[in-house]
Image (spheres, rainbow, N blue to C red):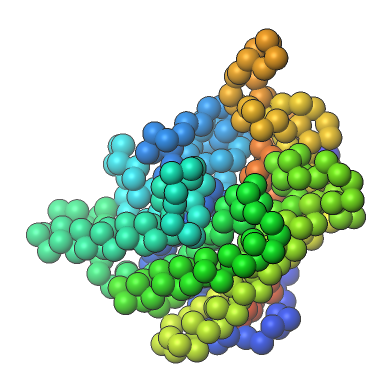
Length: 380
């Protein structure tokens, strides 16, 4: 694959929807993030619930770094663009983690709705918000005792001036498809968004004023869902993605966008930015070869070979006995050729592309292209 070089274009275009408010200014002293595996930088691994083995992390960290990826996530590229350090996970207390510039509460497998006994992660959105409330209270308590920990903890004003980022909802939808009809899944969306709204209110009451909300990407294009729900060719769209999954995602995103507008009208002293990740990722999958990729859906790290290289019985880096034979889910030769890393999560190269598009500002409501003169070192 021949890498392609390009400079980000700064477009002064208005997004398809009416702007929510004035454009956001990307000058924040700290970032507080909430979400699932799309932005988990080590939370679930820190709990011991799951472990990650090589080849996770191989493209950047050289070792597994708590991320379900071969390297960096979208949030890592965003932190770089804002000249801020990568976020430490809230529960990762090994070594000397610094929370001076923010904290990451995102945990892989998390949902907006409260977790159940069957949930992959117990850290649903409400729990993550509760963790933040405790984090803030503990920080202020420690800072009141003296300046000893100032270099590790955010100052009180950082909590109001900081940016609060959200990327959650994917698991609510994806998990529901295993036990519910399409109509039942659509009926669940309003209650999930009510839970999300309640969390936002708590954060607002805690002083949060800058909110950055990612919508959900095209679930139907993940190898995991194609393998399980796409065995009938009639269930797939022209890109080879599961139609119903993407339809449900679009409904969720429309309602999330409407909620963002409602919140902006309700909290007029705040900034709410809605980010259309779905369109960015869909464009990537539809035009993958244009951006230097060779595989839009097939997993780089997995087992089973083409067309999906995904087997739900064995995850990336694991070794298991299947049908009497010991097998290992290994990585492909060049992960930068793949949009998908492990059948569920995107590769570092794809995350870099998503970030480069996100930072043009044209996929957000309100658009912020005039506030983002960032150039990323990208290969596309």
